[in-house]
Length: 324
Ligand SMILES: NC(=O)c1ccc[n+]([C@@H]2O[C@H](COP(=O)([O-])OP(=O)(O)OC[C@H]3O[C@@H](n4cnc5c(N)ncnc54)[C@H](OP(=O)(O)O)[C@@H]3O)[C@@H](O)[C@H]2O)c1
Image (cartoon, rainbow, N blue to C red; front, side, top):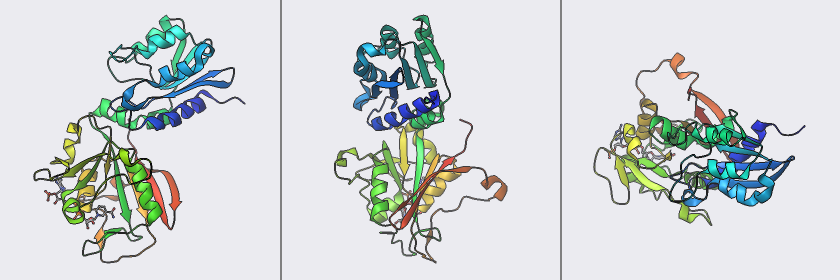
């Protein structure tokens, strides 16, 4: 049985991941061009935002794009810029038979216009809802729809939910494989944030130390009611994350008060939890006070998305369930 539209869009979403976060400020888009069941072109948004995924895939496909089916995670752009033509025009010229889009573009310069232009060029263009495409564009969509970055909260904790000993020591709770994994996750973010307490107490480097991608360290931010310390920018409350210019993906690394501040404001979209097989007992609990709680309200908010073993530690990611 040939792959479904949704399977091809999922493949395009996997390609899109290669562009994140270097495509900033443009969304990381993926594109696959299929002719008689075979892939003839693939593309993803390049560093700095150009070329776009569609332009790259069309260049690879050449004449084979005529009569093909194009799968693209985000509606092709309809606006020309100084840096290149609109993808809707490039596609119209290439004359594929069909274009399948994973997510309609909320950017008012394109919204609906990309699809309309393709249809006007005689191409069968449609949107097929794709959770994979939607997930691959989470940061771009969050910024466009809600004016803020997508927020991941990382917690490295013991079996009994502590992120430090009672005296504040937290290096190291997890093992080498988990810490390397954290560095790979940092490399996917535009910005990384810790609370003022962690900044002062741990002097964390907050950089990417994986061979070959050391240059992918994100911007450093601190949550503080005071002034920005040297080497970082500051926000005075979680609600101010919308002011982090151009940031689509924010990675929050704690500590406990900071985690609580973001969770209380309902500004965490994903929790990435590293659990080490150690018991601390009387230590610092991972998350500070969240105010009065009800079990009814606590249920149904988080959905497990992935889990894996990293040496002796376990990684589990949870997604905040929201309507959009
Ligand atoms: N295992 C892990 O994953 C992990 C990760 C990080 C940290 N840690 C550990 O966690 C401990 C530190 O945690 P912590 O809870 O004491 O401190 P923290 O969350 O790192 O920092 C607390 C500070 O953040 C700022 N802050 C908190 N809520 C705020 C709000 N709503 N608005 C504005 N600013 C706010 C304030 O900074 P100002 O005082 O500057 O105003 C506050 O003093 C350390 O022992 C560290 O080693 C563990």
